[in-house]
Length: 88
Image (tube, rainbow, N blue to C red; front, side, top):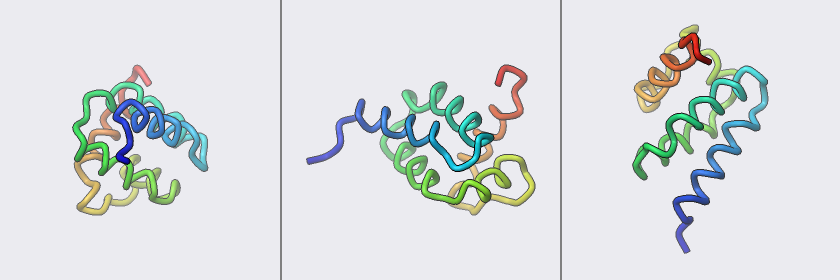
């Protein structure tokens, strides 16, 4: 049985909040709160796949220390823009 959309959003928000390092908790939970409800299924699947990556790698990608893999490059760029926003 496929996962219900609302359940998927809640699961992804929880995974965004409960990372290995506090910096990624803050960055990804803010992004999830602002953006997940606007994503289509393909974008949610990509985001879900990204959440399986190591937090140290994610942090380096989001902060621009290391280039993100091509598969995640656009998503990481959007997260980085929000991360650099003064509202975060």
